[in-house]
Length: 166
Image 1 (cartoon, rainbow, N blue to C red):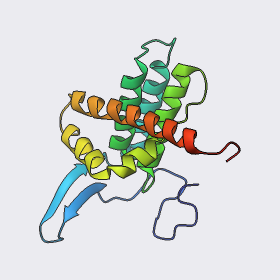
Image 2 (tube, rainbow, N blue to C red; image 1 turned 90 degrees about the vertical axis):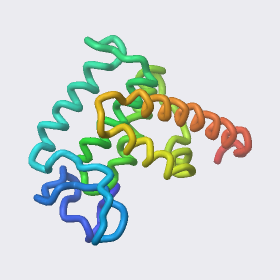
Image 3 (cartoon, rainbow, N blue to C red; image 1 turned 135 degrees about the horizontal axis):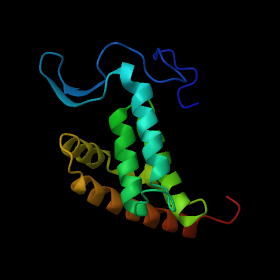
Image 4 (cartoon, one colour; image 1 turned 45 degrees about the vertical axis):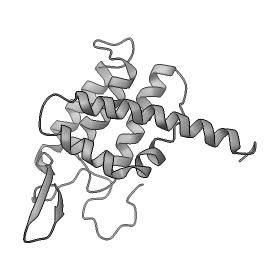
């Protein structure tokens, strides 16, 4: 649904299938700076099967439960690193984080996570890049936990100033 109607994408409603590497790049064409390279498209089904297994096994009351903020941060990072779709991976990762927190709370959680990340997008991308080259993602988890707390604060402020019924 995120990409329905997009004519610039070859894969809509399915995992990406293009043969070219999925790269996050900045700079000129003559001097590109590669920030990240996702797994090849041919591995998407396998990578996503592993992600779903991890997601299910780390839920509260399951085989390997994780603390909610750590699980939300790892889940977001894990999904974005797989990068299974041509577009919308960040939005889906934020939804996954919200789902993880809701599972822990036992009820839907309303956070301004997208708004909070959007307001400091450069820091978001810097933290993703700083942590996608090693197995230690402690700095990412610290950044993400603070972002969740900031998003909760933004949501609380919005709720206070929004008239009932809107």
